[in-house]
Every structure is written in C-alpha cells, then in structure tokens.
View 1 (cartoon, rainbow, N blue to C red):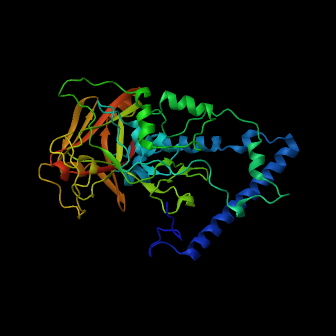
View 2 (view 1 turned 90 degrees about the vertical axis):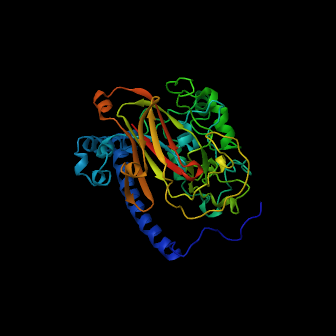
View 3 (view 1 turned 60 degrees about the vertical axis):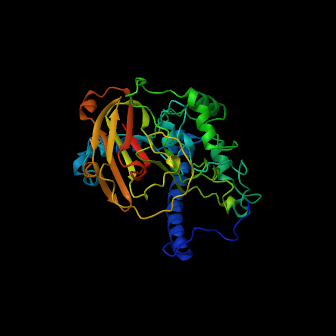
Length: 406
C-alpha cells in the first residue's frame, strides 16, 4: 500500500501548529496540577494508612453518585439540556444506552448500531461499503520519544501492579447486544480483543448472528415487519477503534498513512424507501424512549445497496450515480416507526421534522419513540423498534449515525 509523504486531512479552517501547541500546553498544566494534588494525597494516605495505597483513593464513585443523584432529581425542563431537547426534556435526567457508527467508540464494534440490529430473514446485517481486511494487526511500533529512559520511573508499570478491584459498576453504554460467543472469548482475553487480527467487520458480525440474544420475534406472515436487505454503512473505519493508543483501526488497503493511529471516522447507517425496515433489538427497556441522530441531507440515489432496485428488497444491477445537491423530498415521502410489530407513526416530511431538534450545526436529533406511560410502569421489557422510509424510492434517503434508548 503506497503511503503519503506527509499526513493528510489538513484544511485551511483547521487550527495550525501554534494553536494546537497552545491548547496542548494549557491541558498539560491542568493535568500537572491534578497530578501534583494526587501525589500529595498519596503521600499523606500512605504515611497514615501504609502501603499499598487503598483503592478508594483511585476512584470517583462517591462523587459520581452525588452528581448522578442530583441530576435525577433536577427539573429537566429548566436545565440547559432541557431547553435544547425541548420535545423530550426527560432524556436529560434519564440514563440512556445506545450505539453509534462513529469512531472512536467504547469496545469497538460491540457498541456500534449494527450490534443492536436484527438480521434479515437471509441473515443479512448492514455492513460497511467496501469493507476489507486490515493490512496488519497487533500493536503499532512504539514511538522512540515515548519510551521510558533507562533508570527512570515507569508510572504506568506501577499502576498496573496495583491489586485488582471488583469492577461491578456498570457502564452507561449498553453491551446487551454482545453475543454469548464474543463475551466468552473476550473474558478469556481479560476483557480486550484489540490486539487480535480483525479481518473484516462484515465477517465478525455475520459470525455472531446465530448466537445473538434477540428480542421478541415478530410473526412471519407477509404483512409482518421484518428487517430489510437494503441498508448499509457508508464511511467510517474498520477494525477495533476505541480511541486508545492500542487500537487496531483503519488499517485497510485504502489507507495512505497506516501508522497514524487515527481513529476518527464518521460512518452512517444509510437506507432509502427501497431498503425496507431496519429493526432494533432493545434489551431491558423501561422508559419508552428512542432517539436518533439523523442525516437527511444525502444526495438522492446514493445508497449503493439499492442500485438497480425497483422494489423493496429488490434485485440489483450495478451502475454509477454522480452526487448532486439534495433536492426536496418526493411528494409521497413518508417516515414510519413501529414498536413490537405495530406501526405507531406514519409521517410526511413536515410531521417528521416536527419530531426533531437542531441543537447545533449538522446536528439533528429526532425522537422516534416517547412512551411516558411505559416510564411510569418502569418495568423491563425487550422491545423491537423498527424504522423505514415509505414512498419516494431511492430518492428518499436517510442516514442514522447514533441511537439512544432507555
């Protein structure tokens, strides 16, 4: 794979070297101040309590719980978050789970949107366009300037030598979509699989299809809501992209700078009116909430999965479409949402836009499900939530980058 002489991706609106240097030094001063305070606490504690340092000094659990409890009891509508999320302010003090096609992300592909999806009857799960094997796996070569000089203190080694604590606290991001096989294999690796050779995101997801714990199965009659074959992931990175220096990310043959370790990727789950339903398996839902960051500005007929199709889940013939600015949606364009096999919303473009807020540039968050009665019951239930465009054919395209539910 031919490599660039310099690092790409630069643009005139990006900050220059001096701006980055100033920001970096300000951040460094903050961390040095915190490190100095931490060393003072360490010294005082070990003098009075002995070594090794008790684990309670390494964690912010008590402080986090105080903040979390205060947030839960707050009037969500009166908060800055509530002003932005004015359609569903209760999301501001409700613990949410979710998935994203952007990277870096926690636990790599295990926190992607695709891990929440129900396979189609043929076993298809949306995969990345042009998904390819990585050129190599394992750790990157260490940067010489970051090596610990001989005779100097290796702080990381000291931290790794501390007694292990019981890590029973849950992360806010759900891992309920992880397969039993993946969980078992990960446990044998000590909770990580970042060093393994990840050959293909598509093959990994396909291999886990038969083991995944799915939600309630819908009826198989012709009118039932079943996952479609026309959704795909455009853009983004392949590999284990968790944002750490040990990530195994974006090492595909198209990369022109393989050793940068750059995890930034903005994948999008794309579909149009020929793609059929995309069905999410949501485990242990209690609050009746489902929101998504949507991208509706894609040029028409750019979903490669449905090229040549004339009907929903139709057959393909390959041909090329040039991109063009996105014109208005077709007159018969509709967005439909179903919960547990029942269509709860069928909206035209104006009605759908009324469900969305625009808190920032290129940021659209839409509330696809808001069931306050379910929140009152506060009972766990596995839910199938489905979404599709109806009407408009390949011109009715929509992208999903993040989903949030509770």
